[in-house]
Image (cartoon, rainbow, N blue to C red; front, side, top):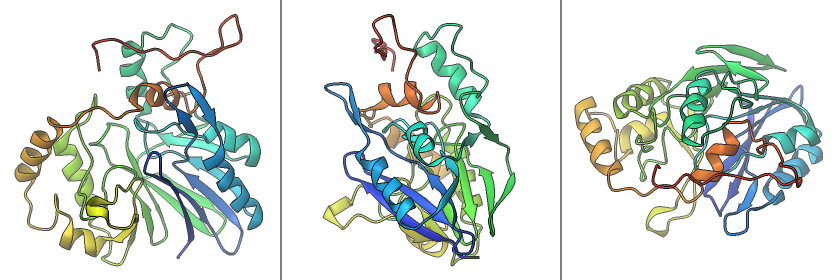
Length: 286
């Protein structure tokens, strides 16, 4: 089965969101949406999300699911906004509860912030399958970048989140809380065990060496050309490379607002007495 895949590239965060649809039933899934956010002012906008809405309506699609591959640290999700406009169930991998538990402490959230994943409407189990029209959504846990990362397989299309990048950019960092380079290696090898022609869709691209932005590749191309984890790279070699590389990286610009919002399924913190929501900035911790 070959689903229709429409990509939306968000240049400010180098994020790729997807609308995946079944041509026969017109049912659709949205994966890794973006809410525009201006870090210097704390203002949000819905330009990127509105492009998705316009596309869905123009194609007369019915959105069944709005999915996250993980709790993103580099952009805010637009899932609640999209759900309000298009419907659908917001879902993420079940290990999100561990991410919530970790960052509830980092941001000193009170007892009114549950860490049971209940902000999401559905928590996927490993190897869970769901029928969406004529499509079958298969969920595979792929920890490493974060402990809660999942990969979604829909027919011949696989959505890998931040686990992999295009072959000339390599693989995801593993230095966030709960990240693990050894787990990432094993997760990627599971993805690369799919048939060679399987289409792989990235969540980000940065256009190294000024090449045009790209986000679709194949298992065969990754196995032959990925600069970090092509065939022949051992687990020990990868862990050494990834650990040393991660030690040189700075934190993503939007990590503080992104995690606070995304761990709550895109919902802002409860408004205070003046009607305004506030995010926290923990000093000397991250």
